[in-house]
Image (tube, rainbow, N blue to C red; front, side):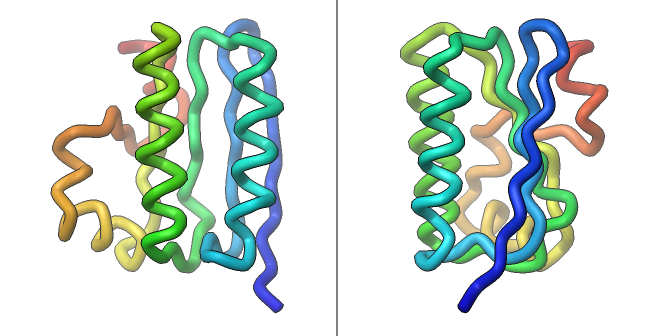
Amino acid sequence: MTLLELTTETDGTLVRLALEGELDIASAGQVERELDRIERDGPGIVVLDLRRLAFMDSTGLRIVVAADARAREQSRRFVVVRGPEAVQRIFRMTRLDERLDMVDDPAAAQTR
């Protein structure tokens, strides 16, 4: 069984969802449900923090792309905090690192 821990923090109109462990087909539903809950509250900025993610497969990538599309539709910022090399590789291979709003530190999400 894949373990994934989710931590959600709210700071004004910014909500940060931090993932720790593995984001794959087994844990995707957990992340999708939490993003849905966060988005229903209508925050101005949603930050997905991948710094403690050990692994992400194409299912995780699909979740990120879908959340970014929903944010654009709802005039909300969706920011991804870069993960470790194994996670960033999938973004580079798909060139999504060029399309997504990506930062190295969650604090940078508020300054753009």
